[in-house]
Length: 355
Image (cartoon, rainbow, N blue to C red; front, side):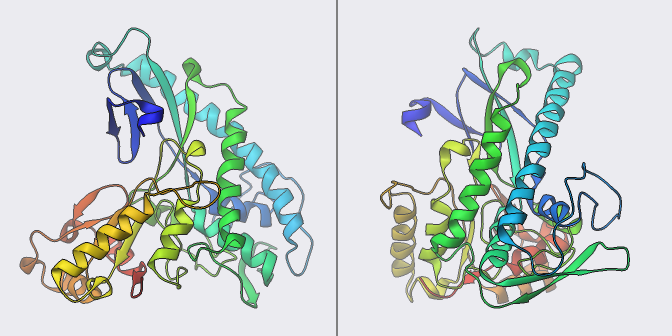
């Protein structure tokens, strides 16, 4: 952080670094990249509401999905979304300055303030895994009587983001960097610098509720994976590989923060408290240490070291766990105060049983 922001920086929101007194951030709205991919497969028609939402860029071919065709169409939809997204953010923050300007807070800043405009994406892991499925397996859309794709027939295996497999991890990197470069083409309000966050907080549950079946096998209405975390159950080759995949995401294209929420069983870390503490420290240090020829490293990590049995018992007997705290996506929260839907989302995540 220091090479970019200097020594006097702080964290704004959940995972955003800023120079204190010198920087302010415009933030608002996120783009559901998984749903955008479904628009590709339905020529811009919403798969749930069955209404035309985006421009029509042409229907895809019938039968098994062709990777190059889907990728080319996805680029068109990303370009459309990037322009719309920047215009929307400009309107939001012009309106905010007109009607809710933070005069006192801005009075504590330098005369010349560096402004950033923080865009955000959700569903990154599902896009990576869906594109991987289309590329390495056989994915055939299942269409309703109205011609709208409602599900997918997936034949064969495919690499998944979260297992330190370049084939899938490169697709996640491509999605992030490509969309960020498209956003940079469009002028922002008050010449703000374009930045990106891969952070969903608990809204991954809401995004999932509004997103249909995806080509990676995720079902309609189920939560998207939070932030930059791998899809639930996709990271099957251990904690280190899961962390390594997320660490490959380029921070230069996501300087508003890359949130990774990570769960591991206490028994995985060792038998004694000292052994668990030592192994967890080593995991965290490794995640934040330069790796590979491109010198990538992790940016942010939420760690939950707890068992499913404990969480289930807390749901059944909340009075026994008044202080049980979990990391959700960028922040900590009292587990028993989450909605039941949010609690089930936490339980659905991968709890690593091996390092």
